[in-house]
Length: 110
Image 1 (tube, rainbow, N blue to C red):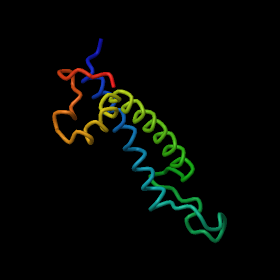
Image 2: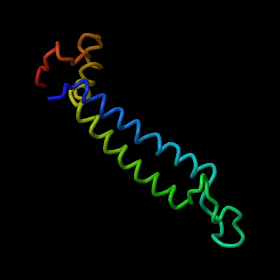
Image 3: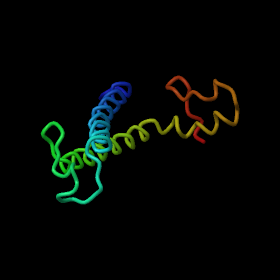
Image 4: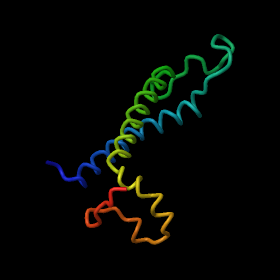
């Protein structure tokens, strides 16, 4: 069985690897290949490509990597659910020792 620290590290690294292409493709679509305008002879950016990749392929890359990233963020939240569940208790008690939910501090089951 894999330890929870390694499991979290793997999920976080995979999320980073999914986020980077989403970021790059989003910036390319926003800055270099914006949509809009007449999609014919009058739009100077019609048919343009960046790094040999057409706008439609950048959109596919952006959508796919964003969906993978979103799924991994949801998995990350599920793996840290105890922490998120204890956040309200942290604000109510205003004491730092009540905010920790590590393995040495058993959950009170609330």
